[in-house]
Length: 330
Image (cartoon, rainbow, N blue to C red; front, side, top):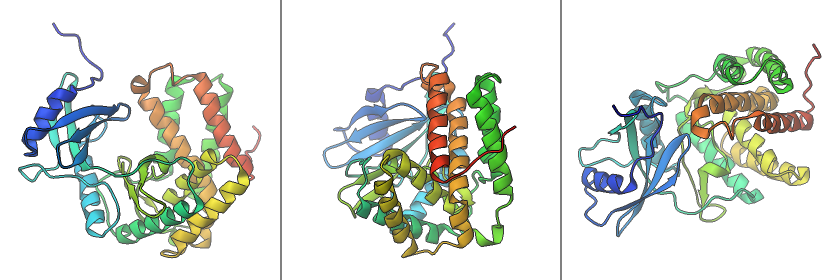
C-alpha cells in the first residue's frame, strides 16, 4: 500500500510534456522548478517565450477562488495595468487539474514578468508603484470577487487560533500577540466605514512580487491573496515592508512620501484612511503570521519555531515604536 503524501514536488520533465500538449507550445519546451513554498512555481520556456506555471498546494485555494483570481487578472490586463496574466490553453481554459500523489491540485500558466526584483527600492520606483497601485484600485473599486472578504475577524481572530495551535500559552511572544490582536480588533471595529473606500486588494504587494526593468517599467504578480477589502490595506502592507527593508528612517520617510505622492496623483486618501494605516499594517502582519502557522508543514518546524516568533514580534514592535503605538498593560 503506498504511503500517503502530505505534499509532493511534481516532476519538471513531466510538466514540460503536459504543458507543451495542453498549450500547443510545440516540442521544444523546457520546465524547471523555480521555488516551492505557499505554491510551487516552474519556469517554462520554448524557443520564443517564457512563462511561469503555478501549482497550487493541496486544498489551499478552491477552484472557484482560483478562477476569480484569473478573472481579476484578465480585467486588469484589459485595463492596461501591468500584471502577470493567465494564459489560456488550447481549449481556452485557464485552470489545469493535476492528479498529484496527495490529491487533486490545480495549475495555471502565467505570462512571464520580465526584469528582476529589487529589495532596495529607489524613491522614484516607489513613486511609480504608488501610481500603479492607485490605477489598480481605481479600476477595481466596484469589482466584487467571490473570494475572501478581509475584515477584523479574518485578519485577527482566525490567525490567533492558528498561533495558539503551535505556541504555548506561557510564551511571552504569544502573550504579546494576543494583546496586540485584541487592541487592533477594537481599532478596526472603530473604523469610520463611510470614509474608507472598499474594493479589490492584492494584499501582498511589495518588492518580492514586483519585477523591474527600470524605475518606471514594472510588472506586478502573485495575486494569490487577492480579495475584497479596504483599499488602504495595500498601502498599509507596502509601507510596512518598506520600513522592514529600509532600516534607515530617513531613507524610509523619503521613499514612503514618494510612494504616497505617486498614489495620490491618481487617487486621494481620506484623513480616516491615513489614520488607520499603522493599525491596518499590524493587523495584516498578524494575519500573515497565522498563514505561516497554517502552512507549518510546508515551511517545517525548523523555520516555524520560537526564534522565528521572537524575530516576527520584534518586527511588529519596531513598527509600533515608529508610529508610537502602545498597548495597555494587563
